[in-house]
Image (cartoon, rainbow, N blue to C red; front, side):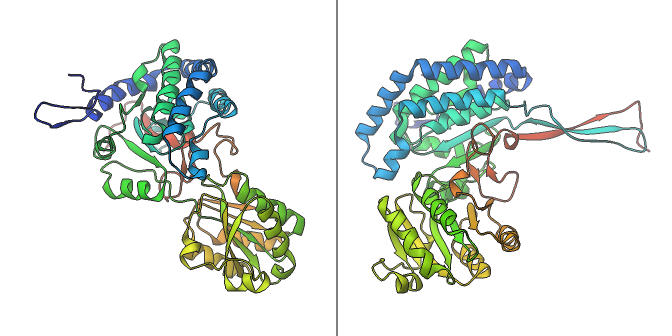
Length: 426
């Protein structure tokens, strides 16, 4: 019986695949950690070439996933691959290959009075478990970042993207093989059985870090059940606040981009906050711009006093990550009121202010504890590629280890190296 294939024994007992996958990943991680940067970069470039060469195969697999999907439009957009998106995956791997090697960086060094030289050196985490939903490109991004940072990764994508994930995984394995690295450095769960998730969450000592990337229910389950450290990605309940000193044309353009560029991503603005001082003059134009692109609205009483035809928002609406062409709107009384709204309803992901007043901008940037805060920029820039990371494995919204887009540096830990000349401790 092959332990890597989930099967039922004769008596019906579940045979988990994860221990075998994790053992192979651990062995592969040791090889990766000791490999040269040139070798890991070669694997990434070969994988990028394989993605391009296998584009038709990947798109055909994605078509099978789409044909079986009954998801709403926003989630179908996440699931859909196009030639441009396959090329973006390949280009992302090429970009990662060009980035500095995060492994072996000397983070700090000092010499003690007794002559001991101590340095803090970046090292791979080890074996990473990536649990994600919908977006098949996440598998390529995660695998690329893990290879570059010397980590082995076990991928468990959503059942709705299984065929796409398998095709992409094949390209990543081809890259590893071509570079002479172990194929087990990138593995995927063998099927869609949900028990693989439970196995990963309980794999203390086998998997070093779990990264969930998906909806609220997935992340909450991972945080609740994991016996492995978790690098959490919470909801993307992002806000754009238009201050009374905002440039009107800039505000209109930024809100449209922040909401409508891609409505199904976690960096999309879900709530517009606008100062009462400028709302009567500016809100009608913003709403008209958005409505022209198919956006629907949920508005508080003060916004509806300006535009009575807007549907009324409930309190629950302001706590909803729409992931669709729907925008919640609230009129606020200045920056402190905006910050209070964000503190009450936000998910600590990304917030933006639009203003020409630098002092107010500083109050806003310092007044929210979200992972990413922006001034005069679209919230959709919260992205590893846009941050110069080459790609991202997720957006961390917790407070430990990493926050914001998780790139190469965030996939390393460190060790201390101590060099002496025969010192004895008294």
